[in-house]
Length: 228
Picture (cartoon, rainbow, N blue to C red):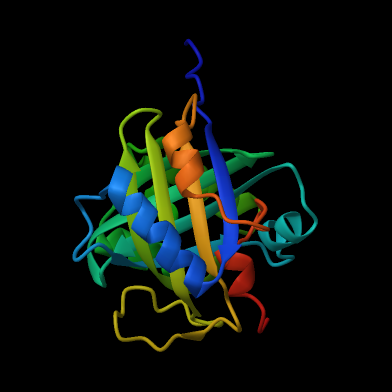
């Protein structure tokens, strides 16, 4: 069987101030368009992140490991009728994402550790998660909530987002309960994220420039683990 090529995308992340958000947002609105899936220009994201008992994903992030991966389950606008299992892989400043759909029943089974059905799944990603839960000890670790403002631009397949109001579920994994309590994840910054394929058009590069702001590797999951 011929191997499937992995398409990595370039990724920049910047920690910005509220004043930066206002100025960059104004410039982006002149050249980009809002993601059509957003309501009033934004949406809420709820994710459930996985990690091992020894916090492998967290340690690899904080240690700056160049090649790493993380699993999460995600839905939008507190509506769990559409749920995605995702594996995010990163190689230096390049990233790629694999995704599979889950039902609410399948999601709850994963949260409760009922895994046998996963081996019969048609989705390779579900079977991969089964193996890593079974043999590496991956388990649901914490809920991560935040608000996202997304913009898109056709040439270069560019996506620019602002993420803010980052909240943590602490040790709570009651993922499918929309009103479950989350708390602010410390003094979390606003995150500007820029993703593109082969090239980043100069008009977008200019629009997201902020004096004194350099690309970093901020992790919302790591931020949401600040309390343990």
